[in-house]
Length: 522
Ligand code: MSP
Image 1 (spheres, rainbow, N blue to C red):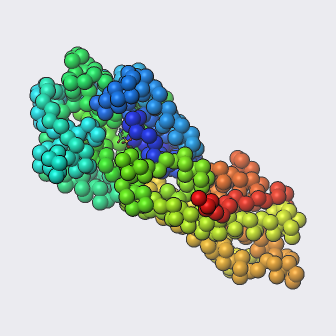
Image 2: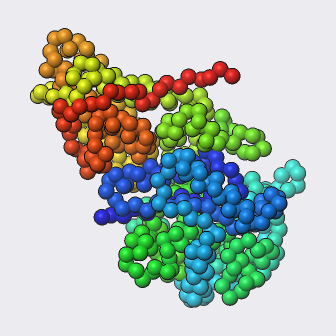
């Protein structure tokens, strides 16, 4: 059985979960569900990034200890996963013992091995430079801008401060050619989308400087093995979660262990802001430790809200729980992945959301299901109709439905093009709606009931296929729709995609799956 290991970034717990976090996790959930339905053995990981200066400071501001603080706020992200009906197999926290042990071993292995230029991977030096706590990242003077307030800022807009302290360094400079080679050699799919691959490649080509990987001026982190005055750079700590959650290094020699079965990861899903960490630092750390790099990193775009950057100070942070309460979970899941080509930035607006719900879900899909199923209920004995011979029009619609899975596999598994996958599915929905209008079963009811049964069968069968492939996107509504078609629970995976509905099977009374959204006054 082919396996599939997909990860979300681990979230900074000091932030309240918002629609941007929901987006990354949701995209991974759709892939994990799709792969499971496709018969793959899946491991889907998400979690919380709990160390670092930013979290230490947030805990201090909240008047508590970092441990107590992270225990409390990491729950917000666990709850986010539940609210969104996320099917993750594990949730890692970087404050867990399993994780800290992994970080220490990764460090030891990196330190014990030589860089490609024959020098040690890790050396002790002194860091003097700019650091942005908000990004937990170092910046070169040439990357900064000075604002009207005289403050220096990173390209992300985060303020930087000057730090000067003893630090261990990772000899990233010596990994440049290795990285360029890795991006090129048969690994063209390592970074997606292609625009990001080009950006990263030219960044690495310009030359890499060694990376400071330890800090001494605060305490909230994993101690450096053999030098407890230092704690590890929070990104080295955080990135290790992808292997610590698989039980590495404890299970390294176990062929049945999670690590042997799932590493290297098939996909690290990330936002565009953290591509460099995942495509430059992370593969270099792994290679330095003698471990395989991940297979693919995909960077999605960012959401603005009603045309503006989402920020606490603007007070426009969109909370997933509020959206779900207002629109329902599956419509929110659908909207986020349908509205914007995955990889590009998008704007979240209530009007766009209402439009999608009322057009795609209520009018097109919801109406199709409701029309066909209630017609069968009233006029075809409340059971799966018995088809006669198929006309070319019947065959065309049946083929369109049958062809969906082969279309979706490359769109989702290879390209992460969620919007194109949904577009393809909704094209079939549109065809089915046109077919109902043209075939007019309500007329056939009076003139040719045998033909009416065939038409209804073709429609029910098309709805079945659409519902099967939509399950990863909208699990609970599609479960409802498949219940109404009396598709047994064990016949909803892709192995049963081509198994037709059995004529004569009794169908339960239908009920609408997607109500129209009416805005409440006030
Ligand atoms: N802790 C690091 C990741 C470590 S992974 C080893 C981190 N955390 S984060 O909480 O700040 O961001 C997590 C994810 O949320 C990122 O992929 C980021 O791109 C995404 N988003 C945060 N705001 C977003 C939007 N407004 N829109 C879309 N995604 C956004 O970075």
